[in-house]
Length: 327
Image 1: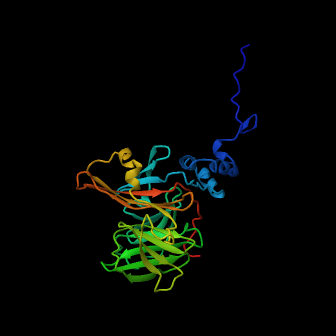
Image 2: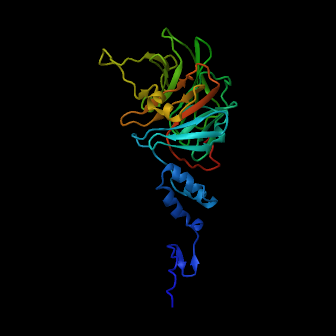
Image 3: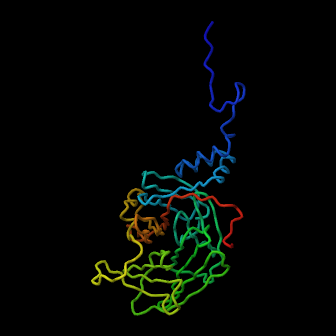
């Protein structure tokens, strides 16, 4: 008699005649698997079936970034079709983010984007598709828009600020704290130091101060605890301070990060394409690092195609569908 064929054993068999399908894995086991995966693998797991998509929400499915991990880059145009670049593993992915269509990114911090689109402003975590809408900004025509926020919008301590240049001599800063329904407006005249094009913003927790950098080595500080007369001050940034008592910036900053990263050659842009990038706040070993915004002109000098890019920390945040900015 010929030997019988070996039985196709399955480690999930509860009996000899009953095999549990993979899609029926217990939620706690799926969550355990999800928490051990990298971000892209986590997204793939969540796409298997509805139950697997829901399972990670029962665990802290949050992908943290180490200080040594480079931020990822999202490249997009006028459609929802985006390309995601991971400079750590030198891999790229095609992915759809409908929320980015016709949107401008104002700030990127801890895996959250602050987006402005058609007059609406909202937080968006691309990898989980979590969205938190904010009250409308009073000034609808925001030009040279730059923003910063203190911490993830899920925190009760989250504070957002947007700086807007009204004209050559006047700037406005709008501030919104978690739970607020309206933005607080602060207007001020520029002083004798001409403040240039704003290229980035960051918040320092210890000093409770927003810092906005321009393209001519100056920073505008906006303090949440100083008096009205001193809450907005412009400083010149110097690299070799003659006075040892000179204050130091509570963060590092990097200009020309896109150009220095070598990403332009990897993307292989056509010579008629220009890119405007939104920088990000990323963790450092001692201080946070502010990656500034950039404008990369086409090699032709005139662009037939305008692309946008966003630096982002690869993090995953799952929030309840009922979550609101209002506390």
